[in-house]
Image (tube, rainbow, N blue to C red):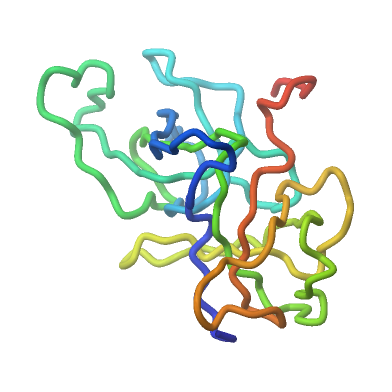
Length: 206
């Protein structure tokens, strides 16, 4: 393909035999959080919650840390700060394309945090010589980039310069996505999984 089409991490299927229902866990984004958010972004936990106890997330801005999961939906509460739990049984909140960097309210995201979920992501072509068969099943950092407010998709991709056996990298490369035209050599689409998860056990709290 050899064309830059980054879209963050898109859920593909579960890595096991169970069906993937693509459901996400609801988390809050505090108004003081200073990053724009897009579908496909990775995130990590922060020591905070909304008034109803929905725990908060912060956007992963380094691409090299233990993560909580991948954003698969963005929800806007009704004006006036009405929170998600009080809306159940009434009208649903509106789904948004993205979250602005400058916020005047709390937002909510749906996050897939299941380590058995397999995602698809494109490598950044920064080191096409690393995008080879010998690096399948190795690990990767993430090249973080803002996405598009029109398409609502993340601009992040796999950091091809980082492909290595390093145990602490957040992403596990599984192999190339099996679609026509996809090949090793840069701007390749890879199957991948969360390698370093906050929920894997033995990970410090925030």
